[in-house]
Length: 383
Image (tube, one colour):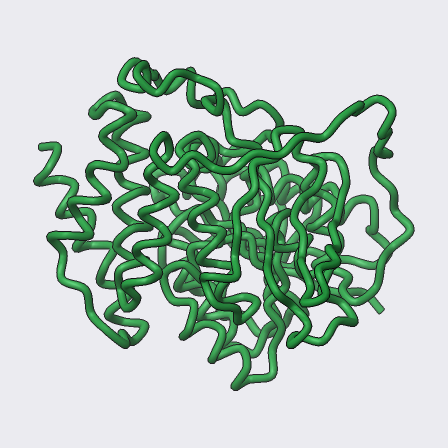
């Protein structure tokens, strides 16, 4: 039986890797819907390759380009935020893979769950901003949220067949990014081109900057708390520069399970799509002799304050993680545009968490409003 998919954010790193997984399993998988932000050329190429029912592009200025390029096909073309949301509500698929970057991915996750669809989730912001709401909705509807991030996929795999009560601790690994050994006194001099050179993973620009500040690991801590229903005190970050161990689970008897592999996103994507089965489609083999060694360190919270801010926001609760997430996004884009310094990113987040009112027990609409509030905050702060 062929499984039909929606891919939200198909032109990014996760989306393009998902299409490689689909190509390798083309007798088992079919793409029904695709969405993209502004990369019209890639969306057109993908659409002609997989022939979906409908596609949507967020950037209205690219709509006519996509429409014209696909005019000889029967593919429906939608545009704008409304087009993305419309596709996220479609019920004639088996699985929705959400790889939209940032806060804009939250509402599509919510829509897909409301439509009764299981979700392969790469958009960590859905759980960072509205973890309790999203997980409660999935439980209420009897749906699965299958992690695509390599760290959460690793934990998910380590927990298969285990009793939740036997789990003592989740160990989230991180590479430490490009500035792990850089002198902290020089962080003011960091330029976007420096921060975009990740040592092990090939990712989009925003996520690569998040990895360099370790905010990405902070967001993953928040995501893990909701995804695996575990207390923050039982989640630990471990720096592992080689990125071979993707994460670990420590059990009450002291034993530890780890999931290992080369840093290749096709592996967790394929696992999420076919769960609970493993498909005999191999990618590059892991050669331990070639790897040579694996090392581990504690994270430096002074050097990477974004990680501590993520912990603090989760401890505060309510809309605090949503404020953290959106202000971080806006600050990262401002840094990439040369409007602020690298070290201004955590400063703006800390200021926002102290200045923007936090709402306890928010509903989905209150969380969605945070995006506009945070954008207005950044606009005022940086001018």
